[in-house]
Length: 148
Image (cartoon, rainbow, N blue to C red; front, top):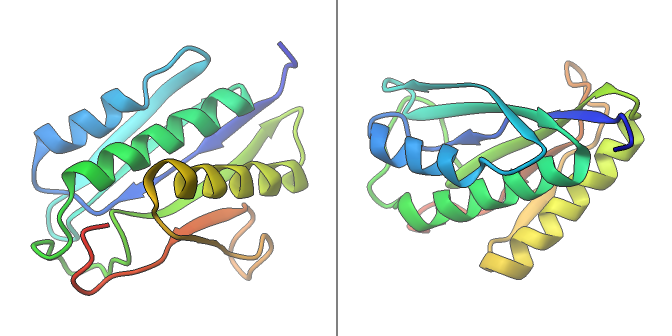
């Protein structure tokens, strides 16, 4: 093990159906990743999952979480006060120990490419140093009548 630790805090467009959120969280449970927290907000219809661990395992867990979210969340029926642009709206990668922000940016790009390859879901990356942000973040494109 490299001693590197990265955190990932994906936001999913589901905050009312605990079974769906539990299924997304379950998809993210893999070796090398610790589930730190997850929560739901019915008003915003949003859930937030916090995981941390070895970088490649965290990337894989995030990808699997997105895949499960795409499978379970129908955005044509999704409503909430928080604007949403996808089943997974943001997927920030945060350096915790032994890893630099620039390496997290590479992890975010790697995750985005793999999400596209596996699930056909378009993704875009934000710049890594936007005002108020310190982590490289993936954002999901699309919306409207999109199921993803």
